Every structure is written in C-alpha cells, then in structure tokens.
Amino acid sequence: MPKTGEELSAHGFSFSLRRERLRQVRRREGRFLLRSNMVAEDPAELWRLYMRLVEIEQAFKELKHDLAIRPVFHQIEERIEAHIFISFIAYCLLVTLKNIARRRAVGLTPRAIIEALGTIQMVDVHLPTTDGRHLVLSRYTKPRKEHELLLRQFGMTLPAQSAPRISS
Figure 1 (tube, rainbow, N blue to C red):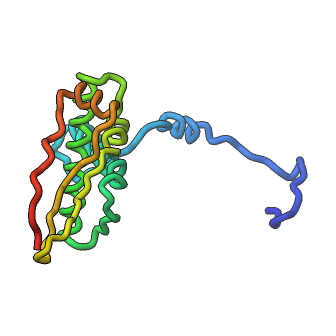
Figure 2: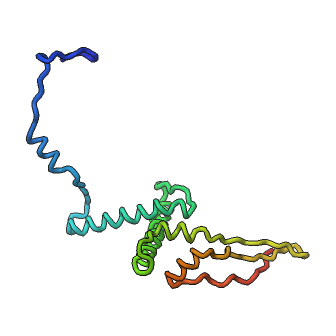
Figure 3: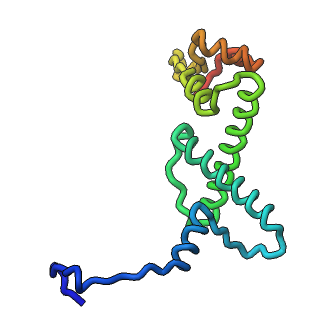
C-alpha cells in the first residue's frame, strides 16, 4: 500500500466494483427508513403520523420567529410540554390559514398572510392622571388597503377599539 502523498503508478493500482452492493445502494436511493417501537400499528399509519409530526415541527420552526420565543431546551418536563403546546398551536394556526386561503384567497400561503397582517400594530398608550394613575388606551394601527382587502376576502373584521382603562 502506498504511503500518503506517494504517487500511484498505473500498473500498481487496481480496483473492483462490487456490483451487488452498488445495486443495493441504488435501490435505496431516495428512501427513508422510519424505526419505531410501535409494532402493532400499520406501517402506513405510522408514516402518516410521522409526516404530520414533521409538519407540526415545521410550522413551529416557521412561526417561532413571529412568536418571538427563544429555543426550548428539552431537559425539563415543563419545557417539553411547553414546546409541544406551542408547536401544536402554531400547527393549528398554519392549518387554519392554509384552509382559509384555499377557499377564499387561492395562491396565498400562510406565510404571506402572516407577513401581510403582521404589519398591523397594537399599541398601549399610557397617559398619566393627576392622581398618579395611568389612563391606558389600547389601540391598533389603521388597516391599510391591502389589510382591508385580505380581511374582506376572509370574511373577517377587526374588533372594535377597546374602551380606555385606568391602571395604578
């Protein structure tokens, strides 16, 4: 066997192709192996459930930025439950938006809907009173034309601006 960096001569080099091994590799290309301890389940059902889990996790990854949350470390039971809960809520939002878009706004993706409506801002205006408390006005920005069009397409309206409240 030549040492590292040593040149091979044409007469000192040979190889053989392991055709059966190559056939096995090519037959497996593009396939995915799913291992599970759920042996009593139908394999097709396991795959369907796994793909739903992948979709839920993808929804969580896509919405994590919009939710402005930090990563969840899977070391504490409460954090695991929180991760599952937020993933499920994100998945529900994604599926709901996908279904609404399919019926009422063909061609719009859930991401496009979130980006468009996400520009509506909610603001709490605090006005001090003479007795040391604050008058709090919760307001959202006036919807632009594209917001109004989207909301009309979805058959939705923004709620009425809430009444002012006093805080101490």
